[in-house]
Amino acid sequence: MKEENRNSYIINHSLQVYLIAAILTSIVGQVNTTIDGIIVSNTLSSDAISVVTLSVPILTVSSLLGSIIISGAVLLFAPAIGNQQYRQANRILTLSLVSLLVFNGLIAATLCIWTDPVARFLTDDERLLPYLIDYLPVSFIGGVVTLLAMSLGQFIEISGRPRLVTKAMVILSSSNILLDLFLVVYFQLGMKGAAIASALSSVAVILSYIPYLTKQPRPFHFNLPLSAESLKLGGTCLLRGLPNAIGTVSVAVLLLGLNAIVMHIQGADGMFILSVCIQIFSIGMLVIGGAGSAITGIGGKLYGERDWNGMKRLFDSIFKKVLGGAALITLLISLFPSLLARLFGADEDLLVVSEQPLRLFSLVLIPLAVNLMLVNVFLITNRGKLASLLMVSLVVCILLTFLACSYWFPSNIWVAFPIGMWLLMFISLAIPYSMSKHKVATHRIYLISTVGNLDSYSVSVNYDFNDVNSKLNDLLFYVSIFDIGEERMTKVQHVLEEIMFHQYDMGKKEQKQDSFDVSIIDQPTRFSIIVKDVGKAYNPLVSYQPGQHDVIDEEQIGIAIVKGLCDEINYKYANGLNCLYLNIKK
Image: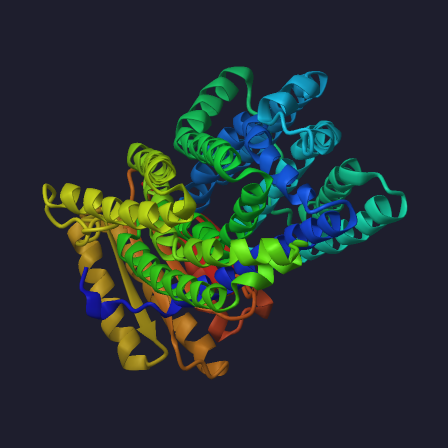
């Protein structure tokens, strides 16, 4: 593909809409978690935040099976939408949500029965154990509801409504804070009240999605496949989600290891510092998590459309934004390390001992961003083994450096965080670079093609008559190379001409000064033309009503021709883009 025929305007606009909403969602979620921790820490004890940290590994493991299925389903769902396989997308969504409720529900019920031994496995500290036993049972059940709410949010983001998910997270945050004040402070239910508040807030989120899910035209149609198809599709979801599961288990192992090392060397005070470090990690994930979501949601669709050039442009833009955000957060935490510790109820002694560890921990955000962004890139491009290797490397690097520091200089154990993470970043960059040297025309970091596809081509078209003519000729040249047959070639030529000039006319009426994208894809069963432009939701083909010939004006004649020549037309409005898919069957 000739780079001069493509720009990043459409991709950057889509990314901006998606990323802003995703980061706002993360911010609201983190504010919710932070205030939740502040309330229980200041109402009960500063040990309350340590209890939450101790419970993270077992809660992560309890939701593991559902998380595997959902993560695999998301990686299949986005490309299916991009490839216009809407029936398959509905089946993926339905099967994953049903599986989550069944399997995670059974696991949660079992763990509730064994709460006491599970709590004693996590800690034998008599200061923390009573809070933990109180907190775990409700958290096991509430975790199922929370995972269901988060999973629905992921599918809704990919459908093109990330702002709706942001609004839902505002509902989650506000309801959780109110319920915390009501149950923890007023009714004095302690840690159990905090867990109940979290579960009920997730129920409120699910209820807020119902109008969108049921309003016509419905974004999804819940469709459970037949048993044989379910087994096959479920197996595919498990396989695609397995790298994410390895990552989840890796993080759980890392937290268990860190909990044990810190408790052994620095006791409850050390656990408080580690807990605040986890909160710093969560602050960093405001940017990193939102960007990872954009890679899956937008990058997954581009992957389904087989748009490698668009994916490279997307990844480049995301990496620049994420690294800038991580650097800013690192600077702020380095300047004001005691602020977070004070928020979580630290006394003067804790403030003194936590200042240096928090500064050191802030240095992990940049290398952590690089590692997690690469993991997301490799997951969406179906390089699960490489993504798994990077996640396992995270555990190995951090735990080994922590063990080494605890042995040689335990008083400065927190320096292990930046040493381990920067070492990991160099490993994460070296592996794909080494792999790319053995493949021609492969990106040194992303491992995607740098020359595009032989069966697809994309251009960015300015709202200028001469540019429309020029790009139309470029597209027609590539259509002739695809060798799709004379009859089909004639259809494609007419459709491209009519839809591109119609798009130009609409753009001039609205005084647009930017550009729109046109892609052509030659697939085994169909030839597709994809048109994307920025603006309010508008399907350019709905103005033509078959059978009402008396209301067709000259401008609508071209649209009538397009409808007559195409075998299938799909329209989607997502992330501020009008996306029109015109298909001619083979």
